[in-house]
Image (tube, rainbow, N blue to C red; front, side, top):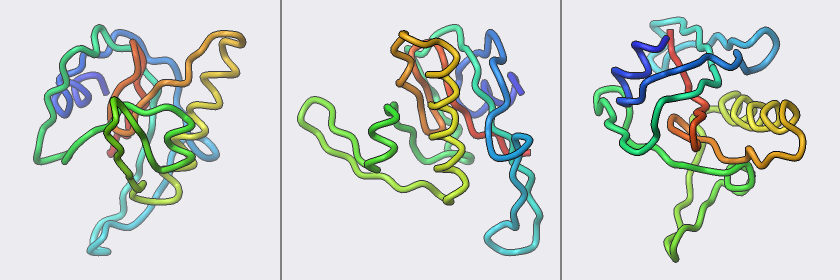
Length: 131
């Protein structure tokens, strides 16, 4: 999984925190062409640094650093710039929000609301990994 994260984002995984997602942590769905069945696993991990993200443009178009509140609103505002975003599937939204909930429950009293949609949070990321 660490190699895949590095290849797709340039981020180096230093620790695997947990598998997150519905049920036992994975979702199965058909590809947009209906020709492939996809099993998707989502992990929360720690990374060595979040200073530079280098996306594999064959895999991802963009990334956002977001808070749980941003995810709930499908909108973020930073330095006067507003961006609206959509999740690719309702299950992806539920998984990301569930990941934020698990992080807050794991460390009560610590602000761990930052995370990412296919991206980063300071030292942690919530990363969608397709297998």
